[in-house]
Image (cartoon, rainbow, N blue to C red; front, side):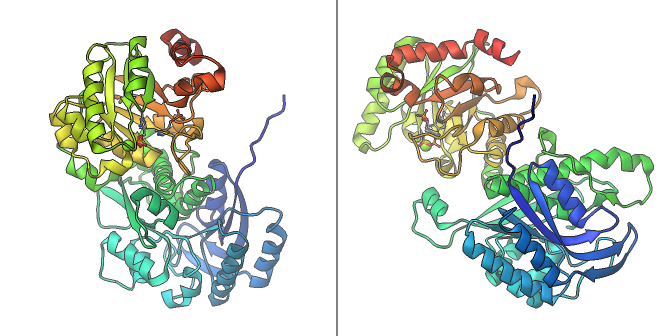
Length: 537
Ligand SMILES: Cc1ncc(COP(=O)(O)OP(=O)(O)O)c(N)n1
Ligand SMILES: Cc1ncsc1CCOP(=O)(O)O
Ligand SMILES: [Mg+2]
């Protein structure tokens, strides 16, 4: 049997060679290969260094670098270019022009710069100031300075607040995403990384319904500090990991989270080793491949989690051991009345585009009607009305999460479901301890515009691994988006507790020539405990 290798995205790394193997190009290649991308490497300088000292930096000519670009550009076209060590002003100018030209022919090309100026073993890689670097900085999409580099780029040498430094770097150079790494901060317990990210017009307008050109969002991630002697090349590896995740289509918030988890995982891998040895050896960072274990992932620091940190856990779904199973999401009383007699565990009323008056009437009637059935009725979006009329639960999306009064929902005894789209939102929502978490869209769907947020089965599996290992501590997960009868077994095999569907039921007649009731029965059979047992073994 032959192995089928999926075509991998290609990243280029344009950075220095560290002959001691820990940092630079070597770190970039190891990182990229472990994270599922092909890595083309263009060496800017041959450095002479070991774990004690930097001896010399020997720049490669821009003519040679340009020849490498010429042979690679159509042959191994990059989706992300990662830049590390830049040896001199000539290389700055060459890189600035190169990025400008490449972006003209490929506007989706991303550039990520890790501004390595000082060697971690001591000594400078170049004599370039922020002013010298400006032509390059103005072409970048992402920059990943540590705190000291950020101070210098911001021109604020006495400022220690990552948020202010990142914002100033954006103002100075117009770089869309500025990630300030906290590895060198004075905090002895935690390593906090901060990302300032300008949303592009399309996604910003979509998320906020605003007409805007300037909208920034920030993400902050914290991990416990790890004391190890094996961290040489960690900074290069972070920027390359970020590039690899971006090249695979992850949104910035998820690429940032995964890159931080990748670093924590690598530091954790060598922690006991360095303790055993107990000497000051400076060893190469351990690239460990795709971060999978929950313990490697950072804590999301956010105003929301902060605001509700004292809030008790939301009531559980009280399943008594049964499977949550099929979760129909319907948009009218007509569908509610048609489906409730079918013996469902859970259902959601998701009403869009009705007047306020109609809305309240529909919600009241739905809650009243559902009382005669054991089915748990969740109301989508309208949490105030759900509280007012005593619904079983509410489902809140990311757009409404910031404004909804979660304490009021919890105190009224309603269950809460939260939508998430990827690892960052999942980690954040998990901290709020809702009754269930939804992940979507698993597949493309015509029911809702989910552009840029299609998870796929692999990502669903990765996100599920972020739950605590102890089953009793896990929040049930519902998968949603494009799930059909044919796709349901694959989704269930990931270990989700439930699948939510709209059109698999409401459009069963046209898609499968069966009644919606028949579709419910078929989906329920596909989800039954027996079917899952077979799938998982
Ligand atoms: C079970 C479930 N998961 C996700 C959603 C989507 O909710 P939301 O993000 O609030 O989007 P809208 O449904 O309001 O368009 C859901 N409704 N149910
Ligand atoms: C509401 C929602 N949220 C994420 S995907 C989705 C639509 C699910 O509909 P369908 O099952 O028809 O794909
Ligand atoms: Mg909603």
